Image (cartoon, rainbow, N blue to C red; front, top):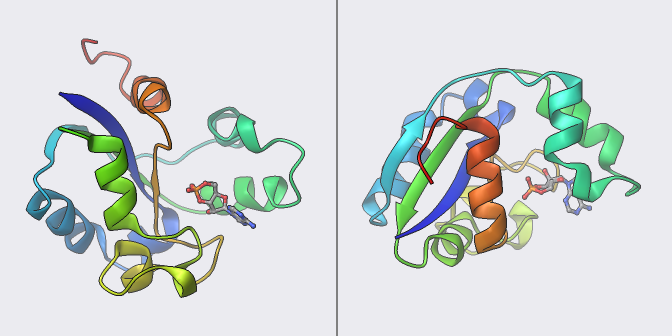
Length: 136
Ligand code: CMP
């Protein structure tokens, strides 16, 4: 079974969409392996998004991701990484397909409601970032 990480981001938590997003994910056949609510420190946000270091949006992304509580969720199903990215939709909510999580709940390319791992390897690494106690 493949594992991936969903993060319900500060804008979606603030807008009370935790339940709406989890329902879409569960209806898509994912099993929730672990879930918690937390608030990232600047250092944690910098480490989680280190791959984007040097990009124009890196500093702003850290400010946004530390602006409120987030809900990281470890998910499992077959083809989990690709399937989660499909139901999230494009990074930019205005370009995301109708019915996708970002189209429904995101408001800009930065405040896009949710994150999903972009590869099987990152699915494992990102899940372990938030849930190191999970058995891999
Ligand atoms: P996410 O899938 O979590 O990956 C990186 C995040 O950076 C992205 O969602 C957005 O929240 C944010 N971001 C802000 N500007 C951009 C941009 N121009 N391209 C990609 N991601 C961006």
